[in-house]
Image (cartoon, rainbow, N blue to C red; front, side):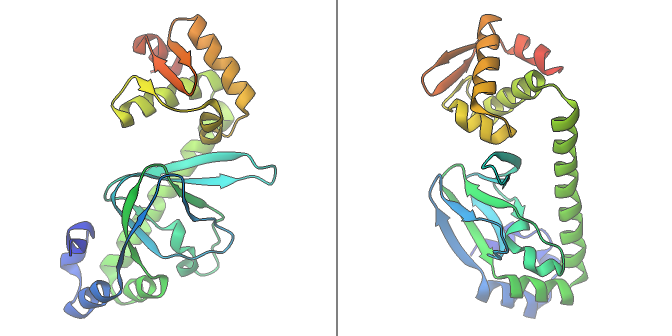
Length: 219
């Protein structure tokens, strides 16, 4: 079991707490495109990513999505265990962007650990504060940053994540990440193409001038 290598405060747990985690944690796999949690009161448990990539997003009543943050190896997802935070409710969905493996700790077990271990409680609070900071930053970008800058920054981020200038991604998918409409994304990508920053093809966007795209992003 590699759980002890994945949990940051493992060495500060008691033997009983470690045994509780070992006996209750479950290793799971999920295929790309599958939704782990749809929010709406679901309480899957604490997710610790060991391989792959997840994204947390919210869905409007009109069906429009916006990505809040991504989860990579060693990242924790607390929003899949929202019931442990009492009266706080997070209508956040989580899906696999790639084939993903993760440890799942049942919510009642993690809540018990938070109550018995100050180290777990403090770590959880810091992690939640960090996630809220991510969401506040996203709100600021959405409200006060022009869409061309947001789109350019997203393409650069995707390129860094994938390690490639050629991104296999649809305009619809980009719109879902940025909380926009596909038509708006298509129009802006065509503008980027006319400026020589990208090259468009069916189901793909290739960055042809990273410096120009970075300039648009304001970097």
